[in-house]
Amino acid sequence: MKRNYIYGILASLFVVACSSEGTNGPSTDSEAVPITLAATVEGTATRAGATGNIDYSVLASTGYGFGVIASQLEWTNQQVTYNGPTPAENPGTVFDYPGSWTYGADQKYWNKDAGGGPIDFYAYAPYVSSGSGSTGITAVSGTSVTYTIATDPDNSVDLLWGVNGTTGLPWISTTLAQTGGPVLFTFRHALAAIGVEVKSNISDFDDYTLTVDKVELEGSFHKTNTLNLNNSSANTPNWGTPSSSESKLTITGTQIAANKLLFVIPNATKQNYTLKLSWKVTKGGVDTDKTSTVNINDLDLLAGTKYHLILNITLMGVTLDVTATDWTGQPVPVDVKIEHGTSASESLAPRKDVR
Image 1: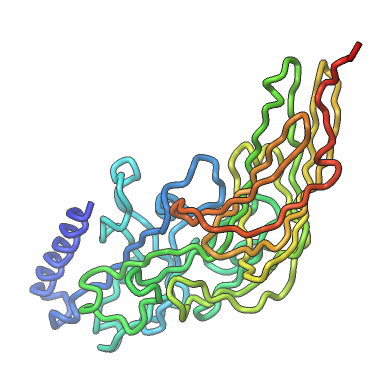
Image 2 (image 1 turned 180 degrees about the horizontal axis):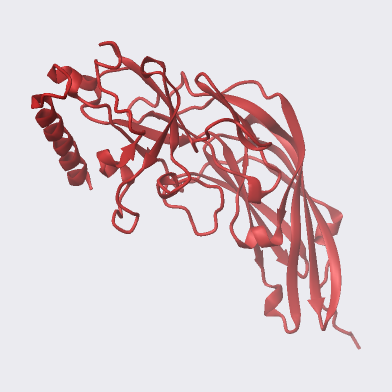
């Protein structure tokens, strides 16, 4: 795919060279070079059903795209959309096609439209025309976006910000000579994500059926915060001070089966949480409802990290394991204390009569 990338750049430069010879184009070669943008997203493709997670195929799909702020170009919140090959036609990443991302009919040129000086580019995703609603991106102002978490996976969505993949910082004081072609945004995940997985051997027993109703996470979650797109530490989101908190997040059994994620604002301070599992075992048409409680102590929620809450449910009770990975699937160390409540260890195993 690197070959396609190089061919795309050469094709763009060829078009620019030809346009500079026309009578209707800008007067000098330096002014004739159009500003082009491109994007890639850290991490691998999304597993089917992982609603809300943004990978490169989602970013390039209809209704998504990303927003760019560049004051030198009078871009306060410019939408950039993908108009290139479909994922089936392009098995690699979308940035292999530099001309595939467009920002409307008003073409901008290096030097001509920036007053001859360098340009500061800031980017975020998914694009919103203006902040609205009660969750997700609720405001875009200057180089900052305000984000509010959802309390269930159906309304929970990812948040990305774009950096120079080499430096991990925004494209500040950018020139054509510096980019050598398109301004390539590498999008990083600004949030933490929580997912629940259920393992069980109950269905291995004759006439037994397990049903998971819901999982509730109780504790203190940052509800609303503002992300400054101008991060000063490489590949580290520049979050401000949270303005409010949320006390409970809920994932239903159906959402768990669909591999849905809950996205939360990062909190590097270790917190204590309580997991409440509502479930039931059915045997011979008779339901036994259960509520199991697990205390998760000293857990920090770091940006760019997926936390996997793995519940192992047996007839003897419930245990929990917490693991974490980054968006590329690499393990992230998790140091937490897990305490199971009394109801979690209550046995439902069939008893044998002793004679």
